[in-house]
Picture 1 (tube, rainbow, N blue to C red):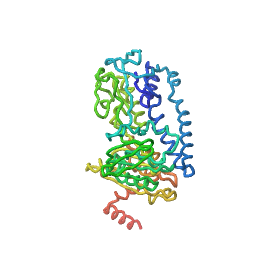
Picture 2 (cartoon, helix red, strand yellow; picture 1 turned 45 degrees about the horizontal axis):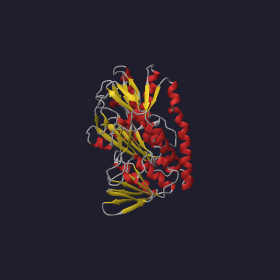
Picture 3 (cartoon, rainbow, N blue to C red; picture 1 turned 120 degrees about the horizontal axis):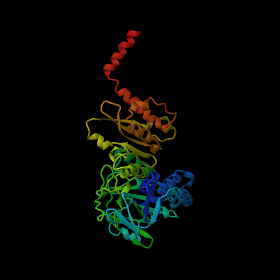
Picture 4 (spheres, rainbow, N blue to C red; picture 1 turned 90 degrees about the vertical axis):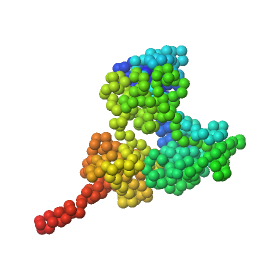
Length: 453
C-alpha cells in the first residue's frame, strides 16, 4: 500500500510492482505531486525563460507560462494513471485514512495491507501574520497558475523558493520586494553564498529587506498591503509566501495506526520504518531533505526495507545528499556544511575562487567559489559548497567522490575539458597538493635536484 502519488509514492509503487508485489496506490489530488505540478518542473521552466534577456517583459512572461504548462502536460504522461495501471498497480483516487494498524479506507473501499508506505508530502506553511490568510496570498501551489505578470510582487521568505522566484519575476519586469525575517538569505547554506545571492538579486532589481518583521496584512480591493513593525507600509498586487513547509499528516488516522508524529512530520527510524512496524514513510512528510531527488532516493531505500524484512535497502543516514538553489549564480552543496566544519577539529577547509577560472571570466561570472571540507591532513572529501553558474550540474562530481570514498587527488588526476567552470575542482586539488608540500619537503627536493645536476 502506497499513500501519496508524488515522487516518493510513484517511485515506491513502481519499484514494488517491478519486484512482483501486489501494489495499491492512493492519491487524493494530482499524480506527480508537487514536483510535476507546482514545484521543480514549473519553476525551472520559468527560471530558464527569465534568463533569456530578449524574453524579459510581461508578454514574455505570458509566453513562458504557456510554454511551461505545455511541457508540464507532456511530462505528466510519465506519472499518469494509465502508465501505472499498465505496471499492474491498483490506483485509488481519494483520501486514504487508516482504520487500524494494517488497513485503510478510500471512500467506500476498505483495503488491507501487509506493508504500507506513507508519502503524502508537505505543503506551504503560512507564517502567523495577522490578516495574511485573508488577503489570499500565493504559494508555490498557486503562483504557477498566474497568466499575467504582477506589476508589484511581495515575497515573504528568503529561502531557495523565495530567492529563485524573486530573481525570476524581477527579470520579467515585476517590482519585487523580498522580506526575510532573518539577517541573511539561504540560512541553510554558507553565509558568504547567501551574500553572493543577495548581491545578485539586488543587481536584478529586487528590493531585499532583511530582518523584516511584518506585523499585519490587509487588503483593499485588488491592493494587498503589508505593514512592518516600524510602521512602514508596502502595497502590492500579489503576495507570495515562501516561508517554509508543513508535513501533510492531518485527517489520515495516523493515531489509529499507532504512527507517531512530531513537528517535522512522521517519525521514522534509520530504515524509514515508523512506530508501526508494518508502515514506512518517505519524502517530505518524513525527511528534513525536502527535495525531489531525496524523495526518490528514500523510496529506493524504503521499498526493499519494507518487502524484505528491513534488509537490502540500507539506511537513510548513509545517503550523500546534494542540493541546489537555482538562482543566478546557483548555490550547490553536498556533505558537511561550513558551520558543521567549524565545530570539528578534524577538518581542513579549502576555498578556491572563480576569479582565476577562465570560463567564468569569459562569461563575466567570476563572483563565486568552491569551498571543500577535507579530513585533517588528508584528501578525503567531507563536504563542498559551490557557487557558480551551473553549480547544480557540477556538484555531482563531488557527490560521486564522497559516495565512493574517492579522494580529492583522484579528481585532480582527471582531465577536465577546457574551458569549463567544473575544472575548479581540479584546481582545488592542485591547491591542496601545494598545501601538503611542506617547507621541509621543499628543502629535500631542492637538495635532490642540486645533487642530480
